[in-house]
Length: 429
Image 1 (cartoon, one colour):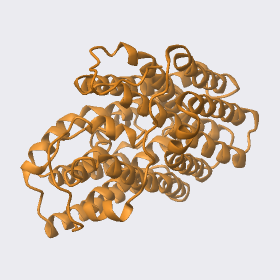
Image 2 (cartoon, helix red, strand yellow):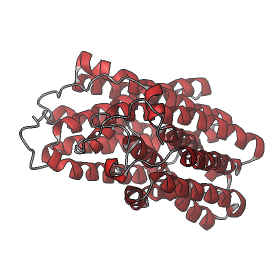
Image 3 (cartoon, one colour):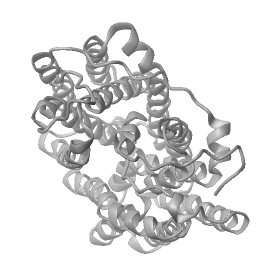
């Protein structure tokens, strides 16, 4: 892939990063495809909504453990070998899903695949972070986000193209994961320095900003339920395979359209007001889907787009609020803890939402989401009442974050050199 570039030597072109970005696109597409496919194929195989939700829980449990373990693996064997091993394991796990149609095996394989994808994304983002100079960082981030949006959106339509039944679609996923090795193997000439081992200071980051930690838990509770249980809802209301792909894609695209407008607004206002507005809007739109959309295709499409537009930026807004208190050099510590809190929500979300769907019907998915955001609205109002906002001069800037690894936050915030002393242990916003 790309050699590690010293900070003193600016990189005037992103061309050396193209193999990394191509690899990231392949992995993002494969990961986005698998999340939707597991729900659809599981339903076809007669798995209950609760079992499918538990598979989502297993994926995020593996993902979180992968984030914790990957730096040790990188230090032990280097980026190339680590990437190759994890890609081989992820491809094998994907093929096992279709070779052994058994819910217990699928739960184990989803855990393994979650672990592998966490390691793969961390490896890629660590590589990009070491290979991009500050003057090209914004362009690299923009390309990465465009690739993320395009890859996850386009991959949804591979399901109607190949069909969720049979071996073919799983074979395509395994091929995609395996192909991600090609740019890495052919383009790289040396390994970058492995990132520092990730340490979790959960108590310290919670003290820094309880509201940000709660926001990341809420994002995990809601977003994971939509991505991993949402296809079951879409199939249950009678959407075709192509329409399910459109439904999930609109949720992905909707999650992007308001990221920067809301982020820009939060840079000018108290971020907690923006979090309050987005959470309240998410709650109202979830209730609209639950009570008004019914089985109407157009209503579901429009409302899920609007719901995602407000719900998906909550994680980035919460992270920006925490980083207002982090101090220079504290972003990776904060990102690691916030990823933990998000993962806790993401582990619980598919399990609880699928159980409620089994017991109370399909629209309980959005009753659940509305309840999650209602609690966060109350929590935000409480935090605003007991703490004042940080001075505007001491606040940082918003960055739209992917929840792929804590390293992405380092890439997004690396150019922010504003001086700010750390908070001396007192509780903030």
